[in-house]
Amino acid sequence: MSEQFDLTIIGGGITGLYAAFYAGMREMKTKVIEYQPDVGGKVSFFYPEKKIYDVGGFFGVTGEELVHRVEEQAESIEPELITGEKIESIEKLEDGSFILHSSGGNQHLSKTVIVASGMGTYDMKPLDITQRKKFDPFIHYTIQNISQYKGKKAVVVSDSRVGIDWALALEKTASEVHIINHTEDFKAVYDQDVEKLEASSVHIHRNAKITDLEGTASDLTGVTLENGNRLPAEHVLVYEGLKIEKSYYQEWGLDTEKGRIPVDMNMGTNIEGVFAAGDAAIYPHKTMLIASGFTEAMTAVNSAKMYVDPKAKSQVYSTVIYKHSK
Ligand SMILES: Cc1cc2nc3c(=O)[nH]c(=O)nc-3n(C[C@H](O)[C@H](O)[C@H](O)COP(=O)(O)OP(=O)(O)OC[C@H]3O[C@@H](n4cnc5c(N)ncnc54)[C@H](O)[C@@H]3O)c2cc1C
Image 1 (cartoon, rainbow, N blue to C red):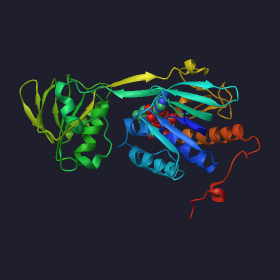
Image 2 (cartoon, rainbow, N blue to C red; image 1 turned 120 degrees about the vertical axis):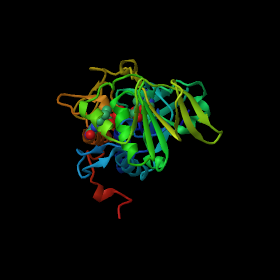
Image 3 (cartoon, protein in one colour; image 1 turned 90 degrees about the vertical axis):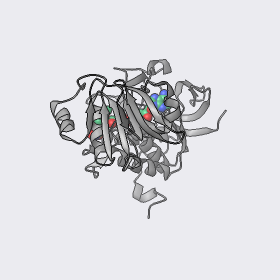
Image 4 (cartoon, rainbow, N blue to C red; image 1 turned 90 degrees about the horizontal axis):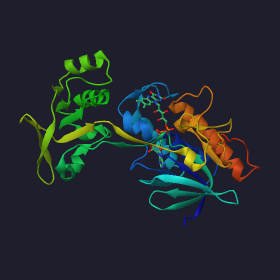
């Protein structure tokens, strides 16, 4: 059994990371548990290259940059960060503390819990090619770390707007970009998305499918299409949809509304000591935005602090107590 933490945050998305930072301000021993191998949640998964305009003070920041900054902020208070682990249930003990059970059989002891796990976990549909394992380092399911494509030949496999966005983002960095669409049309797109793609230097292959990958043990050099054509490729980016596994919060003993967790003004759930923030939480007039998650995370942490120590202040100012400030 692991040592007991003051606070365990389920989900290392942008809300969970910010909650971890704020918990450090409240001097809580904090653990974050994230299912994916990397933190960042939806922002990293869906739109790392998109510019975000509605986070105060960061007008036009990219998703990747914002996650990086919040991650850095969280790391400054040195929380324990566990990735690649999924929480499957929460058990409340008689003394008011919790055991979180993970899919791998691990158990995490905590005095309080913040659920910052959005609507659940996501897995990308893998490229449907038998020898893809051999070329794993060159097959990507997100467009993070775009500088790795500088001067490289890239192939995007997608029939959706996400794939178009990726191809256009790569066009600025890669030396050659192809997009391969299994069908004739792109799905869930505006006409102007397709027009933009058609006006770009991206090579569009409709009704096409990759049947083979070519290369050596250390390099991918090309892909072969069903029609026999060969395209040069050093990287393949795949977006063929998601497998979403919703979190069944009711099985954790939590009340739910439209798949989310109803919270009170303190971000408290129906289980005392368990709080929710970000996309996981719901209340009247809730906005599903990054900035709302930040505020909710603060409130949830302050509430968790007072659950552990009822005499604690209801809030603190970073200028007064933040140890690392210069
Ligand atoms: C396409 C798109 C564009 C958007 N654009 C904007 C925008 O411009 N501005 C804006 O403010 N907002 C935008 N949003 C909304 C914003 O992305 C979300 O509000 C925000 O990402 C919510 O963050 P979160 O951390 O609460 O949840 P998530 O980002 O969903 O993170 C939850 C994390 O929890 C993990 N997790 C889930 N279940 C478990 C489990 N059982 N155990 C362990 N880990 C688990 C997941 O893997 C994930 O990493 C956009 C959303 C989308 C989809």
